Length: 461
Image (cartoon, rainbow, N blue to C red; front, side, top):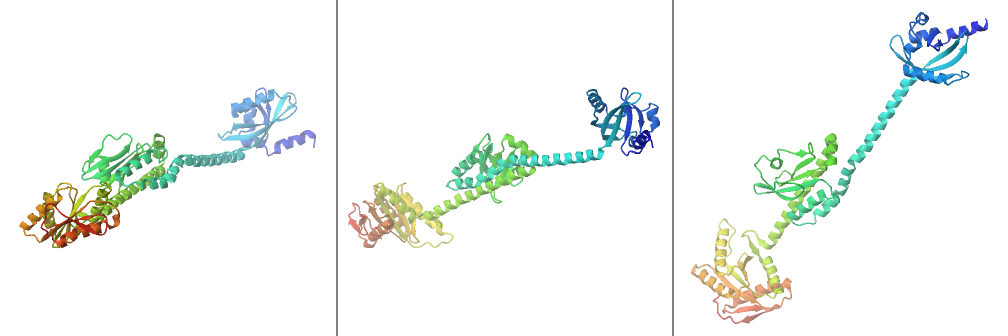
């Protein structure tokens, strides 16, 4: 086999698509069967000038290849990626190797290596990398997006510890709003707390623009609808949240607005929007707990100083008042009305109220009434004419033939032992009653009392 025949055989049987091109017009002079199969064109299409390389190659790729050939001295082969269109319309990606050689004219040998498979793999890999980067970016964005919310969660324990220190509902409301809106707190844009008072929902504390301060519970205002359980606002529009305060009870409404930069975030993130709703719902329930605690402490304080059946002060409150008087060097008189025990039946409160009205009519307005025991009504007065008032009361009780006795005592001096105060004063007063001698006894800060002569004797029965 001659040398030319050998190279012809290699050209024809080569599995890689090969063609020979006349570079001045990009005319395909000849091509091997692999090139024909790869492109879908027959050799006759090339020989009859129906198809030239410039017709099937991407113009941009062909222009780049021409520029490289112009700057080449022809001694070295060149490699470049090239895209071309087959007869069937498919796009082929190839790496082409170029080499000049001389016969009767200068020709260009072009050997193509199909890299379509690699391009698909590269495309898939790029998509996977891009998707992975998007997920990582989304995670980073979520971290930054949720960072402020996580910071709010971190500050919640301090928020709770701060509010539990306050004893009144007005103080709790004002401090809660301050914490909800401050930079050191939960840094919302605006907040307001409304409490139910009788048939109205009234503004207790706010920070921001809240023009309306009072709503009737039966109106169709959105806050009235929230308190009735007909509506809940959880940031769907404008970053507003409106939540009922109370475990199923109509106690109040917490209204909060997000900052401007957060409104768009919660609009596109349902989970973040619900997270804010859950956080503020817990704040609302904590406010409900604090209100119940305030009311409980108020009731405890009331029952510590009141006799609940007759709704009068008890001796604990009277002792507190006596301590105040003694510290201020204020003289006072105390009287004990002994009466038949009022059984706590349906009419007992009315009978006691009648007796209380009689006492109030006889004594000055500064007189304080209380229950000492089931048989004793106490009167504490700083009026220097209290003994005269006691005589008037005694006369009225006698006229009404009430089985009631009255005795009196006056305290003049030093405050020494507050824990014995009630016992000693009561002993002093009852001593006067037991003697039935029309005398009053003064307590002088000791366990014993001293008889004093009243300018006007009172008949004690």
